[in-house]
Length: 434
Image (cartoon, rainbow, N blue to C red; front, side):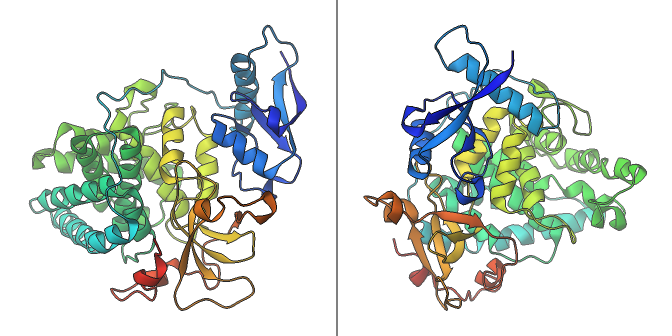
């Protein structure tokens, strides 16, 4: 059965359809995916606000008037094309036993003030633990466990605060930063899935400990992990099992060890060290894996060009049911937004800034800290604009939206300068207006 395109007015769109083309260039819209599946009325409303008509994929022949099965066929065909023909693997939907609905109980401003010291404490804990591994002394993971408990509490209270802090804090050691940021991404996704605090603690601790095996590898291999020969890559892959062997005598839980053991496995079996796939990968390891992969895209080691967070989200979407289970990809995007915290953006009025947080109801309209007004130099103090609130009751021509994502290092938008020391240049009292 072939796939054909059909032109539809946006008001005639329904959930289940695959949008393959727009009446305007994709780069002029906030949609990060060139071709996507309509999964909610929110997606329909977003299309209505930007387009008059779109093209949808559908089979050349149809057995019924329903959209569910036919449009899934067109969607899968496009997904296989994007993923260079790699096979998709579908599993039953994720089922979390007794999921917890974590309510936001504090403001972003208050939680940032409360948790500002937390990432520094985590860095110290990792530094001490990694140092003990290098010196072959006794490994004490209690400091890491204590820090993880505080991180879990923070993410449960307000999921955006640690994301913002982790993107704007500068570290000297890549391995610490990578483990710490991976843990933050994973905790935010775990919260979205409804994991209870006990499971979140296992997840966060496992992510913090996931890189410990790298301390036992030759420094040259770790420093050049993005450009290794086949032989060196085989050595590099042993860091996972090395980490497990280091941690086993330390009394860490089996759940934590499963995260360390499985964070580099992939849904289609292409990962390491065991080549596990699908349901054979523990849930917490799956969450850690997608978090670690995302962090490696937006903050790679060495001179490799970082991917913008929005592009990294787009790549994850392409890899759903290939390297990562579809449910987890969707949960990740719901948790961190189409434009994750720290994404540098230009708005439709020409002003520039950094995404601070997002609304799960209005993923295309995040809160943005404006640092460069249109046509002006950088401000000495930023101002956060909540696009969802700003655009209430606005006509289509008045809507303020993200025009494009800007590359890492864009002049005047240095995230590290926001929190490179304990005396940030941006005053929280001026930045956060709500």
